[in-house]
Image (cartoon, rainbow, N blue to C red; front, side):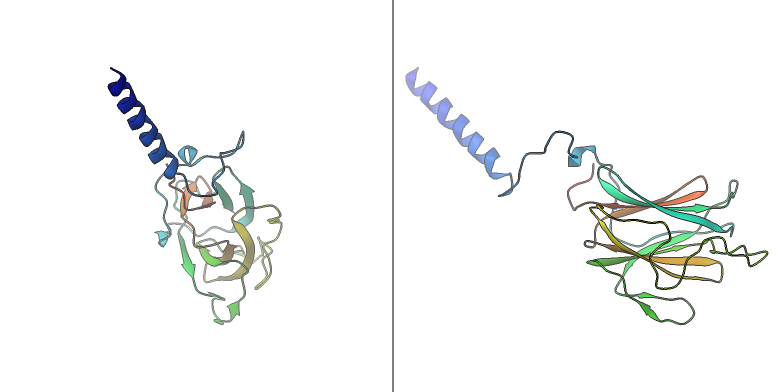
Length: 195
């Protein structure tokens, strides 16, 4: 009986040692209220994401927000009913202004180019709706304290589409979706499994 108890104790200790080795060196336990990977959603990646457009309505605003697992950029488009807002979101080596092709510097470890099928002007009147200027940070977007976003730049509004660049820490997973009259771009805080 004594041998069986010792053998069982040895197996238990060995198993505990194996579990301990799966935690990366220097990893700390999550603090109270800190996000864990299990709370984040699945289905993200770093490849190009696109959607076709069925309506070109003016871009009204661009906003940013911080969330538990990601940083978010929201493009508000004038009411479009049941129509789709087209977009193309992808990592690029360099952000370039449409029309001229001039490079626009964007700070960060990687550049996410976000093209939304919504001009910064009213297509019917030509009146400016979103006050973006080529090469300048996005109006009203303050990234102070953000974990993933490091910079934003307005590139252009050309032929019915608006292009902006988002500087992120690294080439991290992201998702894009339409919610009513908004295009939402979320970029994860890290590479941990989401979901």
